[in-house]
Image (cartoon, rainbow, N blue to C red; front, side, top):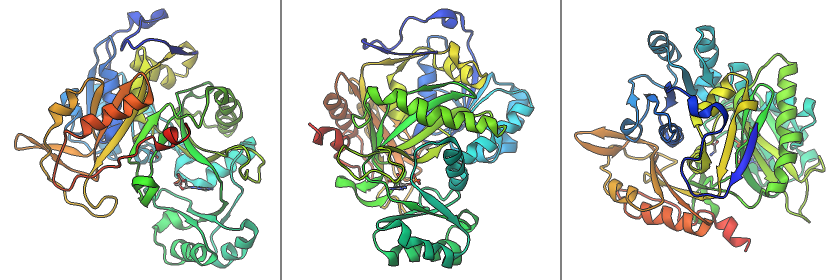
Length: 457
Ligand code: AMP
Ligand code: GLY
């Protein structure tokens, strides 16, 4: 496989090898967010025109694909559609259907799918399992212990110092992690999860984990069971408000590349983090195919490194593309995207040609007032066409739907407005110029996307 960086702004590069003779494909994208719109959009950029479907999709994907009235977690519904329609490939966006075994069901039917089997998706679905795999593979990560008993968990706290991190083992919609500044906060988090069952079964086991100091970044690796190609790094903005204040969200914006992870660090991340995990899973009988997303903490020189002694540590793994990372990473990829995803699904990534354009990208999320708490839906969105008309801008829909000839809000994160440019400043300015044309009642967004990259200078 090749990962090359191309000095060109061209959207479609010359195909290499057998890329040019690819027939068009029938592809189903599962999911309804900005990530799935970006995946669908990138597939639609391929030189070979594909027949695209989304389950269920949103108002943005409707312009590129046929939206199906099947929910992303409706494994039986998706399988039934795939059985009748025999797509060439199913690309699974979110973690829930992966953890529910959608890829296993499709594989049994002989339908090719991009995404790990349920056993592989446990890298995201169970933080205890992910730690176990990382420890067995010698992958640097925060030291942690797992508990089902609250008193035992509390008794372990002094060994970790402060701050300390308390995590629910299972999927908790991004809310199962508490970075506790005091012992009282840590004990309250343990009580919430193990005694009050705040996260149900997801919190029936908790991890007490070492706090890692530094700056986070996201590495999306394409994995075919054996080989891996790392896509360019990106950085997400998890807090709701400027200056990284306010509650945690699914992500309020992102940019790529992120200077915290330099090109010189990429081979080490591949050899010491991604591939050891892939091999350890294989040893356990799990062929991991799809995206292995490593959330990394990079400790700056002179900072306090983890107990592992490493300055790059894994905070978490996800079993899918990140959202909104996808909205900045995919627009930077050249080549035939369908072919790349298919190579991954078929375990022959060595034939894939992943080319990264030298354009940089930034995306800003336009959210509904109140998000990540409760918010209103059904607000009319205006200015979408004007925004899309800004040169270098792409408007991805996250939570939208068409209603009475208008496009209305249908989620907390409503739009992900991406800007591309020869440098990060231009990319950010383009994203904001486009986002500024969009309005709906209660809309809000952060105004400081990529501040960490600019602060470094
Ligand atoms: P996760 O759900 O594992 O992605 O955790 C959510 C967020 O909590 C991460 O993006 C980090 O910002 C923070 N976090 C998780 N684990 C740690 C850790 N060991 N040290 C510092 N921050 C952490
Ligand atoms: N943006 C964080 C995630 O996708 O998990």
